[in-house]
Every structure is written in C-alpha cells, then in structure tokens.
Image (cartoon, rainbow, N blue to C red; front, side, top):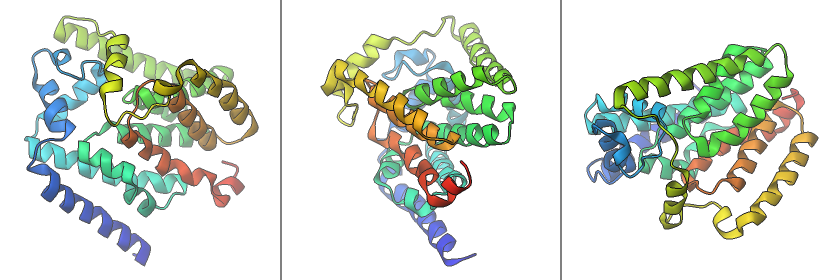
Length: 280
C-alpha cells in the first residue's frame, strides 16, 4: 500500500468515526427523521418525502431491516466506499472526494441515493466503452434512484442508445425494472405511484439547502439548453459527455440540494490529461 492510499483509507475511517460521534446519537439526519419512518410506515407516501419513487422506498425497506444506528452507519460506509472505489474509475483521486464539503453534507444527512447514482454512471461509462449493453442498461436503471440528477444524463444516453443498433437493447433493462417495481408497489400498497410534481416543487423554495438556479432565473434557465447541446457536440468521450449532461440537467432542475454535487466531484477526473489521451 502506497502512502496516498494509506492516507485515503485513514480519511475514510476518520469520517466514519467522526460521523458516529457527531451525528449518530442526535438522530437528526434525514435517514432517521424521514427515510426510516417512510420505510416503516404502512403508507410510505404519507411522510414528508412522499415523491420518492417506489424503487427508492423498497430499497429503504432493506435498510429498515437493520436497527437505525446500524443502518445509518451502513449508509455511511456504503457511500464512503463508493467514493473510494468509483472515483478511481474516473481518474479522480479518492482523497479529493473524501475531503469535499458536498460529500460531508451528504453523509451528514444519511442519503444513499447519490452513491447509487454514481455506480450508475460507472456502469454506463464502462459498459459503453466495452460495448456491454447489460452494464449500460443497469446503469440507466440506477440513475432512477436520484431523478433530479439522473434525468438529463439518462435522456442523453437513451438518445445515444437509440442511434446504436448494438446497444439499443440496453433500454429494455431499465424499462423492465422500473415497470416491475412499480407494479409490485401497486400490488403491495394498493396505489399506482405518480410523481406529485407541483406539490414537490412548491416545497422546494422552503428548503434552505436547495440550490437550483431555476428558482431565481425562472424561464431564463432554459437558455442553458442550447449551451449544453453545443458543449455536448463539441466534446468526445462518454465520460465527459455524462459529466456535462449531468451539470446541464442540474441547471434545468427546479429542485436539487448541494450534497447532490459529490458524484460530479467524483467524476471530475474525466477532464484530466491521461483520461483525455485515452480517448475517453
């Protein structure tokens, strides 16, 4: 083990210890206050974050099988391990992600969905480069866990896949998974999930850490569309294109939070010289 990796592992362990001491006992994180009650509730859509899609809710059911303290620590470990492993796949030093304030904030709130999204980006990028339609399809399915971040890169990859006869079948995977989970949720809860879009957006301005520029710019935010399309046409490589599509999607999304930025930090290595020279 070289010195850099030893430092990174030390930071990772230190983060878990710090979170256990500073956050665990207070039980004021989103996992304890919102996610766990939603998973344990007979009607999960009756809690504050009722616009969570069913696949998120059923994932939370798995975390709810554990005691709150164990589940929260497991989320921290999962997110930190994702930062350690997945960032290297983008050429990004893991320590850069581990010391980023946006990751601290995500860990503080106990959100596992950003890590799911980052693994989705990894599967899409590596699957596209290796012509593996299964990886691309699974990656697209993982983007659904964080729609605020995943919709724009997911739409971009979908359009690319429709133009590629060899990888077009990848789209069947997220469609089948989303449809099957939605149907299962309908059988289990007796209702068909539909995103209550306007109530969700109505709550967004009252969320102090909401950072979407759309709230201030309004319809002028749509001017990012031609800018983003121009950038996507000018750059090559699926990794950089995913990064740009995600960034443009954030500029067009009415609601997102600052801790949602840490997957972009983990993917920033795609702009490095070595990554550029490799053709990706």
